[in-house]
Image 1 (cartoon, one colour):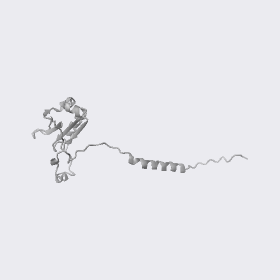
Image 2 (tube, helix red, strand yellow; image 1 turned 180 degrees about the vertical axis):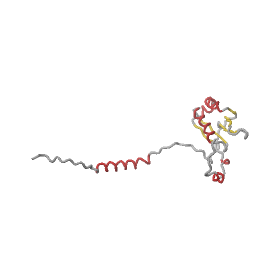
Image 3 (tube, one colour; image 1 turned 135 degrees about the vertical axis):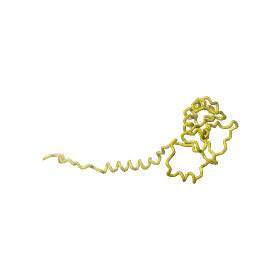
Image 4 (cartoon, one colour; image 1 turned 90 degrees about the vertical axis):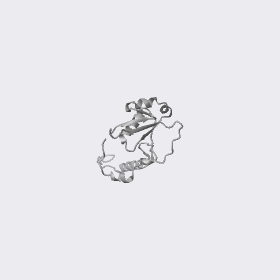
Length: 158
């Protein structure tokens, strides 16, 4: 006779603890998922923005297209001075108003490609400008019919 029980092994998996753990994990994820907000904070321009009040006036970087006979060429105007693209970062780093206020307004016509304006904004960021903001002009919005006509058309590459 054997004392203490049998030698038979039970090879079945006990699923009850696994289900309990899964339910707890499900509840934890359901509670924490809405709290996970990931993304980038953007300060989008508003078409009904107030006029800028500054006695000196804001420092504006304008991206200006060259005449039509020179396509895809753009000039930069910082304040009232035209500057080459290669000098923009150095000019911003040494500009007293940028150093004091840490902000720069970027203006461009609606027909300037986004990549050109983005390049100017990236140069400003590299020059340690803290706030790079876009100027808006509500009169330069495109007609909705023109935007609807371009749906489905292949994008133009520059």
